[in-house]
Length: 94
Image 1: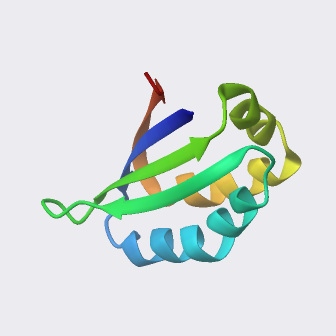
Image 2: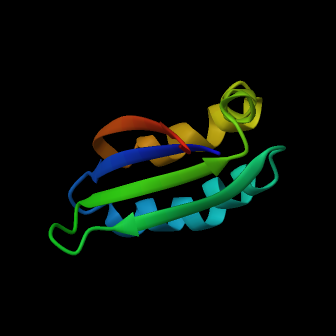
Image 3: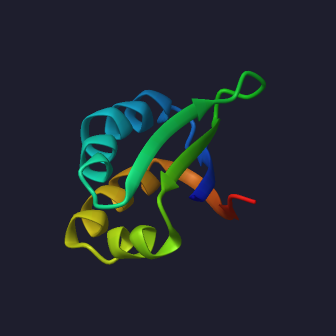
């Protein structure tokens, strides 16, 4: 199992747009990818601008295939544009 945690800081006033873009564009697009297992968008209980996007794939190769798709080049920028910053953290199951 390969997991990405992407910590997102929404631009002020963009929280609802971020959530809507995730639900209507990003989640449907990634869910159809080969090797995809699950995705969650988590909202922080401590700061309403902070989110964590958790992506689960069978392996890193599947995740990299997704990143190389034309669809990813459309839906990821739509999500990232609603953020002031983000950071990516990669994990593999032990």
